[in-house]
Length: 498
Image (cartoon, rainbow, N blue to C red; front, side, top):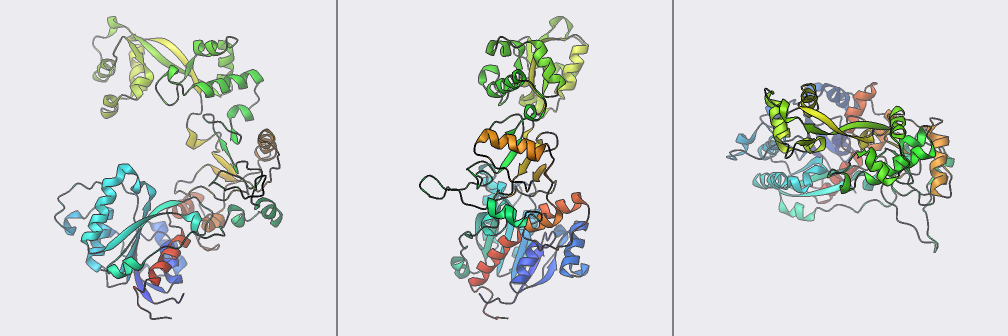
């Protein structure tokens, strides 16, 4: 494809993901808009751009110069569609509206807007419909596309929505996206310490008994024996590649059995109506009469379980002269028994922002409540944080790495091969050879760049927190490259070949 000359304005420019793709296809940046100091500096250093080209805060931009293509990685700002809707000038002050205001004002030939996939969720249907209607009112023919970066050239599971529009319907009708690339870039391709031996041994397509290729699933099926290609650290799920706290702490077989008993039963409605419910000693003993209170207490000492004050008896003789929050909380009790989980799901208490734990503690001190039932649950009950600072560890056979985010994650990689013929052996080998020997690490700055499709030597701040924020907020360059190529192929910018 011949590249053509065109001009573009880069709104919410970040560190230059849009710009790289635009310039690689013949684009000339007239101005960019960004307010984050780190991002501005990174953008200017890598593109050799003058800071005077930065238009700054989009809410203060009155107009844009004539240009061919408008790009915007609109932040996933929470916003409302409520308003007077009397015209574009009346909608200023919310970032999507500010973007569409400038689109309407400058009338470029085409645009690309990017946002998080949550915009297409059913709960945001009205917001997306509103955005598309405002774009149509501005005189544009637009469609949205939900794309995964992995399909277009980076080893990352990153699903985003891209809204692409044209001023002329002829070009909108001519626009189409290419099919996902067949030869995917995989995680092992970008790990700097992943040797050729590791790559060859892991990038094999698993086959069934008849020699047919087994379909691979994102972040799921390994190229070795159909085993998962990452290990998940948490106590609330189970599977052949799930590592529990009792797997890596020294525990007896009985202690392991107790943990699995809790894991298997805590989501049953018999023990409560939440997605995960603690169990009392009686519940445990109903399931296994050999379990004692001492067994549970020892698991608490190991910091695998925790004790929860679950139910309380209301002392009706002590409920006078209570504070307002205490009265409201007790007012939610249908009987004289207060259940802590019922309070945590109570809508009125949430709306009035009543601190449940603090209020219950105060009522206990005043003898208005008496502890009725103690239950036991896992200490680590937040899947996203994982265990002991680890959420997931990805093997070199993995197709993709998870979505890079600004706040960083507890995801790690290993370049160790874990040879195994069955699930039990696989898990044991991983614990012994990878986890216990600490043969895992976080991705590096250069690898993060490659995972987002930036050049290997892209200049970013030294601080991990700073460069992760920048790269995690960026667009994936190859996806934008593919979209702009498809825009050019419509002929919307003419045929002035370079």
